[in-house]
Image (cartoon, rainbow, N blue to C red; front, top):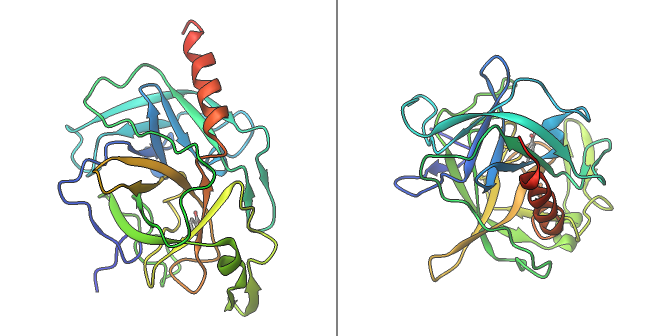
Length: 255
Ligand code: 4AZ
């Protein structure tokens, strides 16, 4: 069985150029990201780590296959800003948002994605799609990243249903009860499909019937991958004002 993202599929000809691969100083993919402006990548704060951020990060944009280096563009990350309310606890992240600013504007054709700003959406049951270069098979303990961007269609799960899941994980009885903050998190799942390690920071997208799309979340946390537990995404709506304000402010500064 050829599992991908986990249980995902190739994106085919779909334009996923708002999906970013973040590479560390050694050139290894470590997280996803989302192009929300020509010079800013929205990602998960837990991808940044320390307050000042990691050194030597490169954002790879417009490259659906990381092996084809002639496509898309690589830009240095010059500044990383965490959301001020970001907190990491035992197994979850609050306000898991960070912005990474690029050395210059992206100059290849890319599809900048609009951030959802309405906290009432997406509704439980809505179809959403997650994209990433992360782990394709977590049944083995090693992480096997994908060189190609992959996608999985999921459904939004209500806070109530998300917190009602109770299952064994690594020998312990686990539930998400008390951990899902509706204002800042979205749960999503579908059978055997899921985001996993290496997908963090990447986009959860709502495709509308009219062909338009919007960012509704970014991959944040979960209890394992592709099991009974929904994945948890940091909601775009609660980051919108902070992201807009921060991008405007940074764009006025001389480089
Ligand atoms: C991770 O470790 C991770 N299934 C990301 C997403 C999910 C679980 C773990 C959600 O980065």
